[in-house]
Length: 141
Image (cartoon, rainbow, N blue to C red; front, side, top):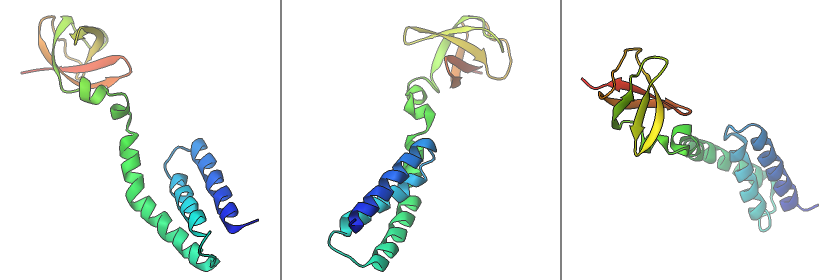
């Protein structure tokens, strides 16, 4: 078996491991392994490739992982963060800690008071966060 094949197989194994533990940890090593596999076609020194693997792993871990984790943030993945959070809306049905409704962009959403206060219909509120299909709001002073 050639060295590039071994490094490629290691990269695939690391990708599979990343699928079972989606922590963006093993992905860095898989990327370094694939790059080393390509370089090993020309450069055959196993010690040099080992050092290169560790350098690429460190660089990938230090710079790529924070970017990928930021991209995988659930609030930005669903688009809710930019579309709804921080918007000012009007209450359709009184909002309490356990019930209420708001209307935003022509859509009806369940709403809850973020601090437990009762907010009456017609009041203006700001959406502060969401959990699934429930928007949490706070009254604007």
